[in-house]
Length: 426
Image 1 (spheres, rainbow, N blue to C red):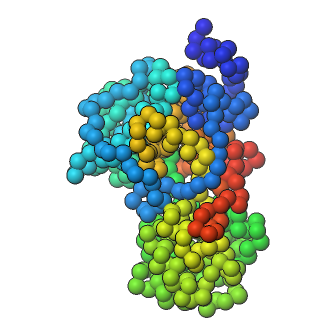
Image 2: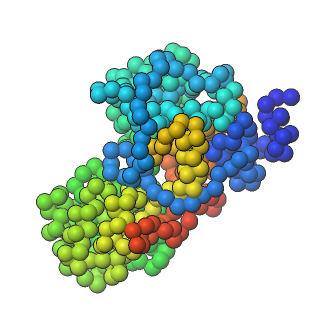
Image 3: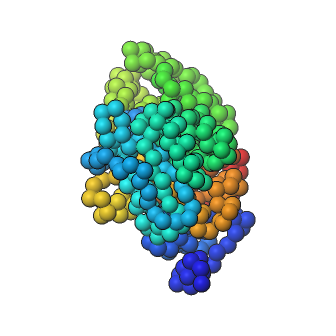
């Protein structure tokens, strides 16, 4: 009896084809990879539930992750697992100042995924990119020389571009963690929290609640420009009139907010594409200008799920979109039990990517990492809720909408548990 049959007989789970338009569950269940497959119709060996929370990102002021683990130097040419399918994991395990706690947390999450999957389907080839594009290039070349069928990582955009270039030449897919959507492309998929998804979700929700006329405050930086593009597209799609878009730098913030305030009753909502670090200054400017969420509905992104933002007076009553965090909390508890430290918030990305790689190796045979499998329209279910890859390499996530009240964020529109009935991921 093969591994699939053994797991089926123990759990009474029937395997179905991807063609049945089902969703894979990549929330790992110990020793039973069939748990990953087809969660919506079949359940899982140990599926994880959902609840509200917030965003994650790297170097962008999003969220306050718990205390990171103490960084230790990784072993050279480390391998995790003993399966026949080789998957490379390229991470910033070290940087100029020494070992990276962030890279170590991503590596630990990958080990947790392999151990929960049973360690018999994939061998994870752990490579250090030393937080540089050159290091990423060398790591990718080594991974391909070692027979990797799939590359997971790296994290930083310049490194992702270099790995993508090497992998593309070899015809191997990449699942990377950069939040920079410009790094994505056919065969290079981003499993990250992207501004476009946050903006689409919050704009669609506000339109569903009758919001018709909006203004936007856009910081003059890369994140602001990405969010602005998504904002304009969403407003057009949702038939929301854009009355003003005010761009600002720190020294011009107050003047920009005053121009928004001068619109008075012409707007019923205000989108602010700002990151957590700068929101205290924005809140003060809103208060000074007389703008608050009781008169104008304030909208933001998942970067606001941060204690510094949630307590700001001018943002009480504001709405923002963020990932579902119930399964993340369960993942974090298992991580703490195994490693004795808190995972960084984005370590769930590594866990989900490795879990997915193991599940597909277990169930999809030679087509495991083909475009058709990875861009399955029904998507996958992981530690941050449902997600799917688009053919252009970007992703779509099921997000919840939260409202800030009394210094906390409460869900007011739950994240979807599937993509059933939603638009095609093309």
